[in-house]
Image (cartoon, rainbow, N blue to C red; front, side, top):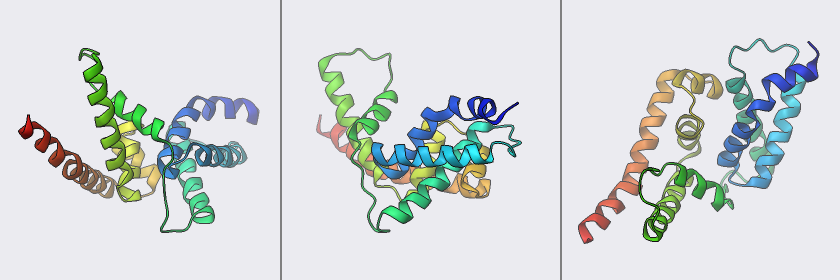
Length: 182
C-alpha cells in the first residue's frame, strides 16, 4: 500500500477531530488550521513507519504536540486567547438535552449556558482543558488520553477530576444562584 493511500485511511477520517482539538488548544480557528496542516505534514512523513491500532489517537497525539510547538513559537507563554466563540457555543449546544422543547426562551437560556460553559472551559489551565476536551468532546478513553498526552492514566484521571471540579465551582455556584432567585 502506498503512502498516499495509507494517509487517506489513517489520517483523513479524523481531520475534523484534529481540527476540533487544535481549536480548543489554540483558541483560534485560523491558528488551528495552521496547526492541523503542520500536523498532517508530520503524519505524512511518519505514515510509512506507523503501526498503530488506533489511528485517531495517533493523529491527535501529533496534533497535540504540533499545537504546543506552534504555541511556544508563536505566542508569549502568558497569553493564550480565544477568538472562536462559535466553536464553544456549538460545543455547549451539543451538550444540551435535545429532548427539551425548542422554544425561544429555551434557546436563549441554552445560548447563555453555552457561553458560560465556553468561558469556564477556556479559563481552565491548559493541561486540565486538554484532558477534558479529549475526554468529553473528542470521546477518547482514559487509556487513549494517556497515550495522546504521554502521561500515566492516573494523571489523566486526576486532571479530569480537577477540571470537572473547577467547572463545577465556576458554573455550579452561579447555577445555584439562578435557581435560588427564581
